[in-house]
Length: 136
Ligand SMILES: [Zn+2]
Image 1 (cartoon, rainbow, N blue to C red):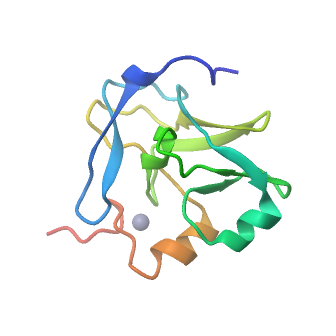
Image 2 (cartoon, rainbow, N blue to C red; image 1 turned 60 degrees about the vertical axis):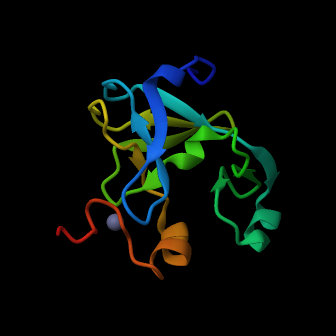
């Protein structure tokens, strides 16, 4: 369990690509497999979460979902990508985010939000990740 380590120096919030608002970016090189940040928030019953229809909900299992909307949850700035460099791992009821591959300084941190989120929030507007965005 690496979740309690202070990893503030690994990332910073900054303006992301057009249309995606702010994002989280690597402030220094991050090794593959390194713990980056925990997705934090209030635990609410998944049955309740399913009725909210808000963003920033992260389902742990059929029983519990984390409502990550508070600003203190820095991990909520991680944008979706169809080819992400981070992945979320559920450990002991915590949502821990790790590097899937080596990440360079200045690279945006991304993760796959999953099919349900994608269909509800991303598909209607079109995905703006670096894989899907049209190269100008
Ligand atoms: Zn995409």
